[in-house]
Image (cartoon, rainbow, N blue to C red):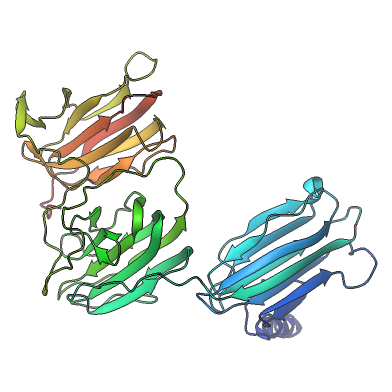
Length: 440
């Protein structure tokens, strides 16, 4: 027993010897700290061995670009695997992306590029035929700079500028966030599509908020695309402009673990999204004090032309059809009866759950990407709010489940004048309602 513990201790020392937590299964462990270089494995002229597991950590300071460019590649066997993983600090690799197996080694793997804190390259061979191995060039480069200096609102107590095309934000890094925070994060993405993928939000419901604003030039626009509180995970936030400003605020009472998200900045495919209205004077800066209390406008304001009453619910004027669904549970297929939906539709569905939690669970989704989309709004009494709990969603991926803790949900589906598709299917449910709760 003592010998076993001693061996585990030695392995632990080996895993941390070079400042990086190599996985314990790695038989070969090497760290490269130079800004660039070439790795050939195995180093000699022979083949690699069976039952090999070699791990190579290419260190690169956080914020710089860690790249791998493949020069030669020859492996054999379906269970021979090459994978890469982004690394943050001295932590273990976050996840593995398999690049190639021996069954598809007739071409070079795709080049890799991470902006975390380096790259872990893992090579695994099994009890099969062997081959010559691989040669790869690594580099650690400065990230591109943001072409303009961002105008942070004066109410931001702390500011951060994120100008790399991919990364992760965790706020706070450890523990709970503080009381009375006003933290601002600017994601620079000039002329491209910025996507925020929310991994978790754990903030005090009704008191602490995440608000996201589109950015044009060096200034945030006053119409937010997301305002969120509580523990549910928002749908992905997508903006086609010059980036976004994320503003996190907390009150002076209860705190929690905060939020975590991954972001990407990439070229726009197809037409830019039209999911918010640009104010006439988009060059003006926010006034001094707290600028985050402006009335949100997303797309065309949902009640812009005044409400029309449909059986005791105030459907927006622009709804061409309005349907009330007031059962405790049920399924909605649209369009009903198969086939595709029509062009130029604006159809609205009100899921009535007075005093209860309304949940939409998506089962299928297929609309023309970028042009035909659904939005969901919270309903209080008989009127829909103006801030969507589900921002515009299109394509063929399922939206995240939509939950509202008020009196129901208004779902709006809009199509353009050209291509149509199969539509969507969802289940709704009303639940809870016994305990009093804060309104969102």
